Image 1 (cartoon, rainbow, N blue to C red):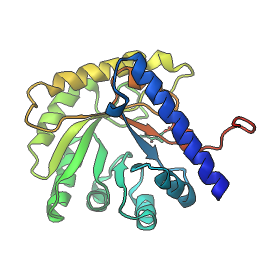
Image 2: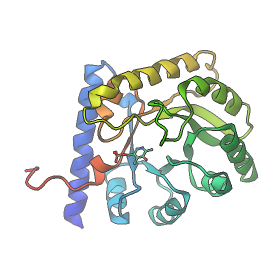
Image 3: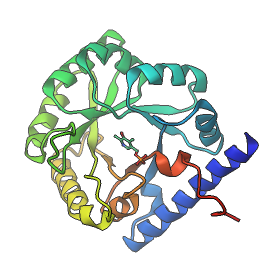
Length: 237
Ligand SMILES: *Cc1c(COP(=O)(O)O)cnc(C)c1O
């Protein structure tokens, strides 16, 4: 397991270096960009190795698998829910996760706020935007995001922090730059009039396209494969 731990540590360092370079190109401070490890396909051993290497933000797509992993990994980390929230899972989701990145309807918002109230807590949330207008993906269309944000802000037990988006998968990540740019515009326009609140998270960029996302203003990257997949044989000295 020690060799595996080393591999993951190297993956993390390599990604951080690429984040640093992308931030530099965009004249941003690398400190503005946080790295979340997506653990949906990772083993417990691998997740532990990532936490040992300093990762403090973890993301899961399902309530049930998160429950098991959370119990094993312990409370030293912060968990984000990335998958679609079924309203009948709102209570366990609100109990397990520190942030729900995937709120895409008033209905989901209502059920999360109600669940959080029952747990006597405030729950951080992001609005998921379906930036590519893809039918198979969740999220609101960009035009409906402002209205949903306004609605969620009035709910007593939610704390709206920003936006999340997943760009369409295309072979050349350069192709999705306009989508990320559009997200940043939306994020900034929604920041107006929200000075008193914490509106500070733009979650976009995955293994395949995170450098473009950093260049276009992401503050939170969600990376799975790039951290946990085995590097190509002989790829590293
Ligand atoms: C799986 C997943 C990711 C990570 O994708 P990778 O390509 O493995 O980096 C990020 N965000 C969401 C919502 C996901 O479901």
